[in-house]
Length: 176
Image 1 (cartoon, rainbow, N blue to C red):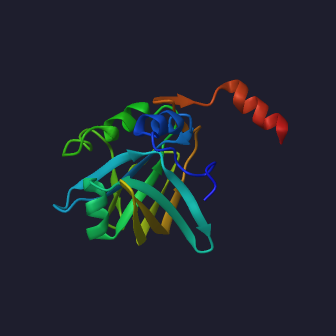
Image 2: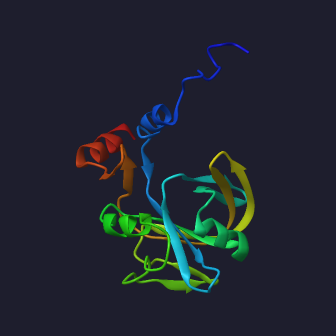
Image 3: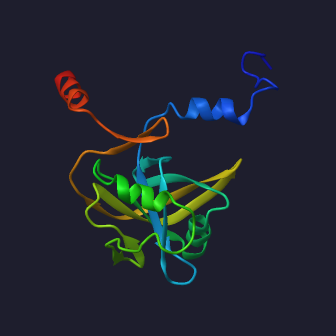
């Protein structure tokens, strides 16, 4: 193997974390129905579309996550795209596991899955596949239904919630 592509023996978690923090990602909340029938969820930034035909999305979740355990059992989940002004919602779902994340949060049930109205959009998904890689699992969902809202995205970058600046939006518009 070419040594340029081999991982250095001294490569540690902190070096990777430092690099990973440079990735900017949209902030989402993933929800499902807990094993006890109560709504459950977490904040995630490793979410993306996978396929348009058929419609599929994927999310990466820590292997010890209670939400992941519930998704495995219930075989369904929802992905919510958060708006720039929903930092408090993102922070509430980013907290430690356990009950209370839905306290004071408006939600509805769609196909037996808790969904958060007022987000930039959401998709309900049926679990299609799950594969473990290191300390996370890649969860693939077949999209069952979608709700498309409005707003600008909440972004996660360098360990902080951020939003697109007016200049960034103007520059992107000028390029199109």
